Each structure stands twice: as structure tokens, then as C-alpha cells.
Image (tube, rainbow, N blue to C red; front, side):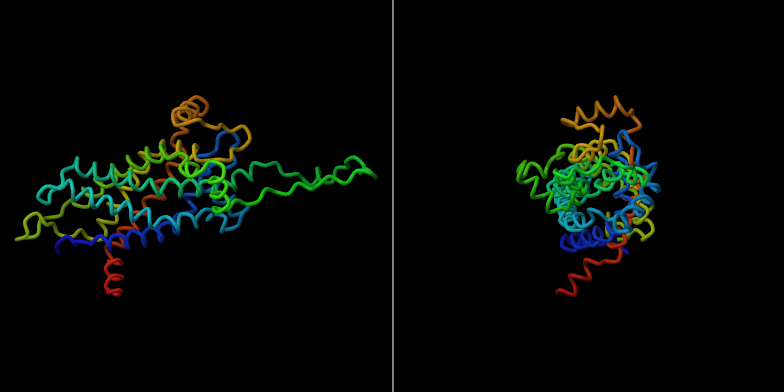
Amino acid sequence: MAEKKVSLPAKLINGGVAGLVGVTCVFPIDLAKTRLQNQQGVQVYKGMLDCLAKTVRSEGYFGCYRGAAVNLTLVTPEKAIKLAANDVFRQKLSKDGHLPLWGEVLAGCGAGTCQVVVTTPMEMLKIQLQDAGRLAAQRPVRTPAQAAAPGPAPSLVAPPPARQNPPPRPSATRITVELLKTRGLAGLYRGGGATLMRDVPFSMIYFPLFANLNALGRESVPGQGDVQAQAPFWQSFMAGCSAGSVAAVAVTPLDVIKTRLQTLQKGEGEDTYRGIIDCTRRIMTREGPSAFLKGATCRALVIAPLFGIAQGVYFLGVGETVLGLLG
């Protein structure tokens, strides 16, 4: 069977469906990744499993999905921009239906650059919501002995001291309004340079690697020139998982820098950074080179299923089915 040609509208539907399903499945691991990457001094979590267990214990099961609403809302336009841009660049760079490796890399670079328009504010809001639980876990909690300890006698004249209420739980709307009030639109694009530094190399690695892994062992269809037979589902699935994992781990140091720069609330004794170079220097000096790989396993476990699910959606032809029903 010849390689299936998918129209751009169908690709956009497939990308949106894959994004929604994928985010729902792997979001708790992404939350663990963000919290592990933000740890500097106080080690609240020992690893991914410890982070997830403590999150469920202190915040409930749905605590693992803090910030998911932002991702689910913006993942469809993000995927749409990325897929559409990659398609356009591949068509522009193709010669006689053939796209050389350098053209695949450039097309991925263009797609990664375009998606930052949506990715940066999405990541900015998501990180604040995901990291709120880690910051709450760092706050000292009074033990029963401390609570029962006798204090100074209450004054008969002065009113009793006001109780300190816990800080309100952040919401995406409140964070957005506050950033727009204090910093304008640029506030939502804090860390945009670091996001660009992460997403462009990721796309430059992922798209060519997937295309070549997916083409391994496939022969041309007799009588149709360079048209190749469609890859079996298992090959596309494994190619998506493998290419996604390799690209995710390769750009983890850049993801750590991006996460640190986009985190607005810091824990006690944690660094605030003035930019990409300052962030890189401080992490290297204070935490060592290994800090740049924090959350690498989580990233691989997040990205691999995301792209595997995407390939499943494409193979099943969800976008074509939807367009057929609408037509």
C-alpha cells in the first residue's frame, strides 16, 4: 500500500486530538518533571515516583493535574501551528518531490520557531500551577507539640493577633491578569528566548529522525517511482517514540534553564536569574553539571508516549474520518 497522503486540515485535527489525548495521559509525569527541575536547595522530592506519591498524598489525585487545563486549552493551536509550519517549509524546500536531510532540518527549525508564539505563554502559566505544590511543601508546618506549647497570655486591651491565612491557590486566570497588569504582554513571554532555544533544536532533531526511522526497510511501490509503501503501525509508533525520546533528552539542559527562568515564585534560598547566561552560570557553579539533566527521565517518559499516540491517531485516520463526517 502506498504511503498515505494526509491533507493539512486532517493533519491539524490529528495533531489536536493527539495532543489532547497525550497530555491527559502523561501530564502527571510532566508535573513531576517541573518540580524536580526547580529543586535547588531543599530536596522535597527524591525522584519521579517519590514526587508523584507525595503529590497524591498531600494534594489528592487531581493535584497531579495542576496546570492541565492550560495545556489542554492551548495544545491544539500549538500542534496546529507546528504541523502546518512544518508542512509549508517542507513543501517550499522540496525539489521534485525529494527533500534532502538539510531541508528536513530547516523545516523542523521553522516549525519550532513558529510554535513558540503559543508554547511560551502556555509553558509560563503551566509551570506556575505545577510548582505551587512544591513551594507549599517547603513551608514549615507546626507540629502538635508546637501548637500545644503555652504562649504569652492574651492582652486584655490589644485585639488577638490575626490568623495567617494560607496563600490563595493560584489559577491561570489570576496569574495572567497579574502579569498583564504588572508587566504587560511581555510578562506572558518571559523565558521566550529559552523556549526558542529548546523547541528549535527539538524539532530539528525530531522531524528528520522520525522521517528516517519511519522509512527504514520500506520499498518503493512498483510503477509509482519514489512513492514508498506505507509503514506498518508498529514501525511508525516506535519511530515516533524513539525520535521523541532522543530529542527530549538531548534538549533537557535547555528545558531546565527555561523552567528556572519561567518560575516566578521561588522557595527559601533559591536563586532568581537575570537571563539565560546568568541562569546557566549559577546552575553550573552552585549545583554542578548534573543539574542540567534534572527531569531527563521524566521528559523521555512524557515525550515518547505523546508522539507514539500521535502516530496512532494518524494511522487510524481520525482527521480524515472527522472531515468525512463533516463533509
